[in-house]
Image (cartoon, rainbow, N blue to C red; front, side, top):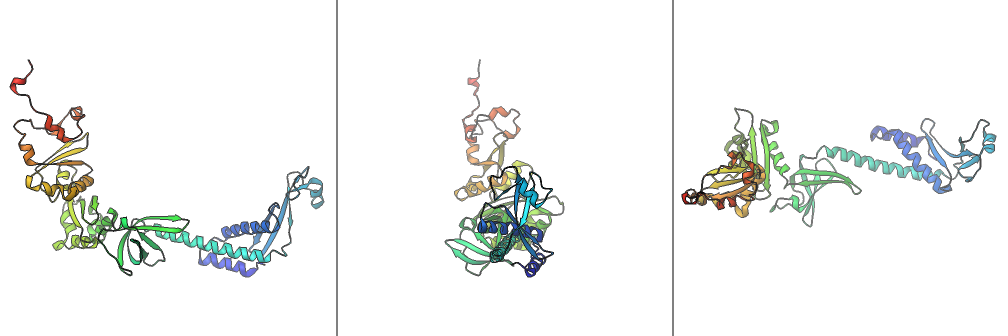
Length: 389
């Protein structure tokens, strides 16, 4: 049956594969017990015990001592128990070693299956443990295959495959088998199919890691990224700041002759990158977020977390952007709802309307019923002739 070579193999597994031998033996004993029961009848209470020191395997059946035997496979009468050992009493468990004459082949087969299963489980756990450290990291991979738009990449120095769905790709990018490509590890999960790794190039995390890779001051924390808003393949806005008086956050990210920012833009397929200097003042931050458009003024409503931005008439389309892209990214970057108005629309109402600076209102209820800043245009001052008597 199982001999000393088998137990030596267990020792080797413990040393080479870091499998805990005691845990492995417990698992094997349970498997062998199950195999024995299937061979000799499920009703029988039995257990298999491995002894690594003596390199032996023994099978024991056991019965509980009772007054009246109702199940002879699991129970034994007190009188019969006393014939085996006089000190037996009710409730004791009487064990007897069973013959393993016909069990050798099944035991060896079962042991092999358990070893293989345990090794696969161990490899999966080790791979998952190793890969979990790579989550939220930037990795260089090799394109292995492309199937219906989904790109499968091999992670360097592993046999593990990453999956990049069409939604995780930058629109317009094309890859071929064998191409080396940087990806951001978005999620790692373990399933019945094995370890699944979701990678992406469209995630804002991908841009953040590129900044850390290409700009040492970002990696060190001297320059910090406050937030990123991205429309993959088109435009990205990155808000940066520094607490160091001797560092220019924007200039540091741009680099000498724009080399740093150009390298990052090239990696994301020529995507435009707007660098915005973050400010704790929401008026200033909102104004800067609409770059490259110039801003005349910004008004905010704290209770609605909304803002109205006035821009020169000839900069209106630039501020809004194609299909509203620029103002939409600015809103996501700042966390404020942003409404853009041309300067002429405000100037035509300046004589008729008093000036409203929403940020200076003390009465929060004054605008509690307003849903949009357009409603302000319905408010006009009273003429002298309209004063109440």
